[in-house]
Length: 97
Image 1 (tube, rainbow, N blue to C red):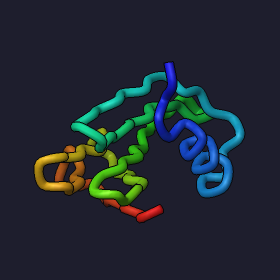
Image 2 (cartoon, helix red, strand yellow):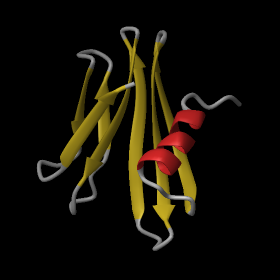
Image 3 (cartoon, helix red, strand yellow):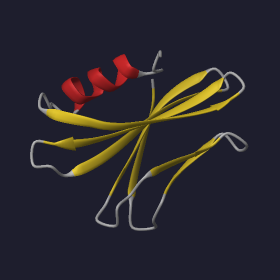
Image 4 (cartoon, one colour):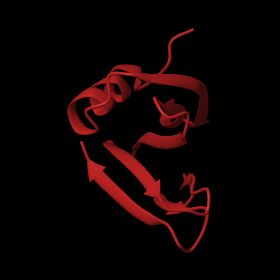
């Protein structure tokens, strides 16, 4: 099975988070026609779970991350071509790639 954005995830981990030790635990793939969003769930060397999402919609590609103490997760809506976080206390970072 081909996983969209897998190379982007690996580059993100090494080049942006400077993590070389992590465990990829889950990959969730969401599709809507030609648009796709993939959430990568991983644990760092301290066994703390984190997530990051990569999405391609309307011809553009994004990385989306939500950070906070409430168990933040990234949410992508294909209907509105928008991203949000699962809780109000999260800090969201979106980068067009």
